[in-house]
Image (cartoon, rainbow, N blue to C red; front, side, top):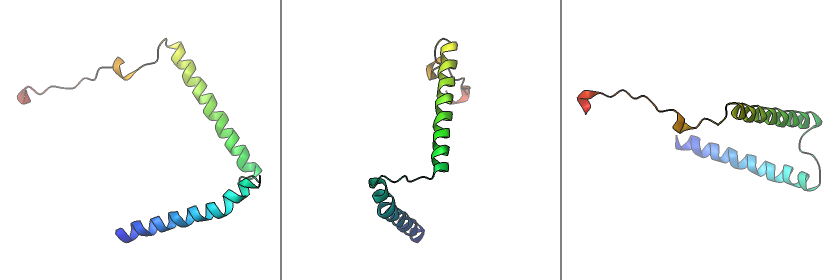
Amino acid sequence: MVALIIGMLVCVGLALAVVALVAVPARRDGRDLLTSKGEEVVSALKERQQSARQRLERDDTEDGEAATDTDVSPTVPVDPARS
């Protein structure tokens, strides 16, 4: 088990080294890290996140107040034998 964890840590270390050697200098030179298709995917995800957030805010304002954890009291059965 220890060997597996050490192996995983070595792999993560190698991945970080590759990123440091390739991506960081490319970013400093002003080159994009993603292809044009990758940029489109990221922008689409940002738009979906923004629209979902707006829907949640709109739903909260339509309900009056946002529901909180204190609004709902849990019903826990009480065992009289344990009291």
